Length: 359
Image (cartoon, rainbow, N blue to C red; front, side, top):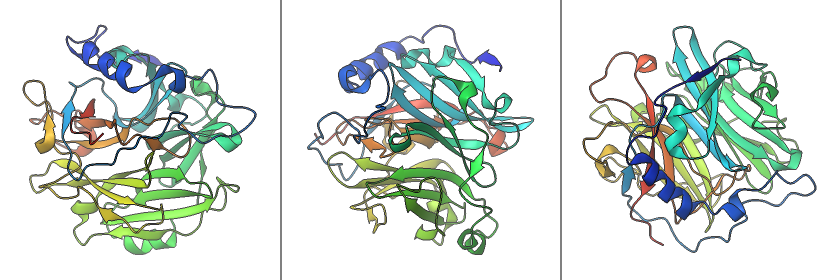
């Protein structure tokens, strides 16, 4: 196991105050800081009372400064700490990294645990998603390795506890093969309702896929994907989908797009069910879910891309529940003056805070 420190050893001026204001206002410790997940019975999260708010039809955000260096983050708050899993792109290829901290201003000084030196192993592993599957009392890490892969762990704080990779499929499903063209099968995303677990994925060719298995059979029995959404312009429906249960009702779908200026942003839809139909929310360049045009920065904007990320959830279980009243999104951005191959770009993580909540 290798531990490295990425970023500053002290909090940047203003960042800690900003993040701690968020922390104290939006993450009630009594409900979000349990000692352990339940080992006797399963009660879906969140444990806080549902909000009565609704998502607005347009969004405004403020952004932190760049906080830390990996890309493709997934994050949960558990046992008094933020736990982040992310991708690192190095000369040897992609791998996964884990780090944790108590305050966001400490993210840049957190120790990295590279998971390729553990049972997850070497080779291509990227775009992780973390959640606690309460019916089995196991943490799941879902990621891409050329297939839709996962590892499990009884203790999220133990990096060496992750199992070797297993896959949901024996190979690329027929539906993906028939539609992927020259794209890439990427960015697997799992979410469960009361009966089924749904696996979303993208192909960089204008298709969003969804497959499912029953909650009782998970992770086995994943069915053949269906096309949940498609666009004739691949850049309009590119990759990095997120799907969340809204505590006030329904589901929120986010998909990363590439704009007419070449910069990345997120479009959004809602549905009463994970099986669709998905209704437009804020899904255009003029009215995006999150794009540099509707994000305010403190001083000069450090990025024009709002790219692959993860919502800060109300809990950490497989329902992926978020509050309609306090949206926060951890995203990747980069120096607007940087260039070159996507994998070599200097991606950094920042945190968006919604500034026009309807609550």
